[in-house]
Amino acid sequence: MDPWLEQALALLSTSLPFRFVVGAIPVSITVAAIAGWRNRVEGAGALALFGSAFCVWLGLPWQPAYVELQQASFAGSILCWIWLVWGWGKHVFREWPSPIWGHWIVGTLLWVLPVTAVVVLLSG
View 1 (cartoon, rainbow, N blue to C red):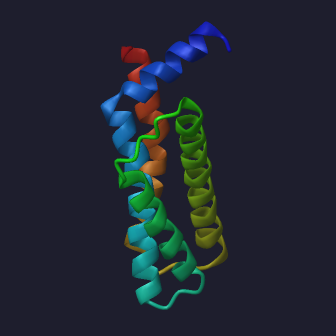
View 2 (view 1 turned 135 degrees about the vertical axis):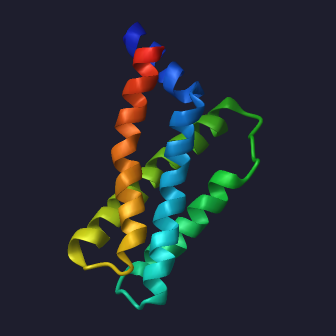
């Protein structure tokens, strides 16, 4: 891996604002899905259940002793984060989700994520 990419990833992974936005996205997706589930929007229940399980997974203070397990846990968390955002996007574009305020919050956080990354990398 290129040294500048390693440095950028190290800087982003230690940045508190970037980590906050990355962590707030699954929580906001889960809240929006739960609100949609209560309004009986089709497909919101599965998204709410997976989002809830993923938020619990992220909140667990589990640190495996082996480096290989730490790396597997980290890779699994990244894949679940991507799947949750992908599932939310499919849900929003296939249905007219209700209530719209929850999905506006998610969309705003997804817009703020690259902006935060650029600001963190430029302020370095």
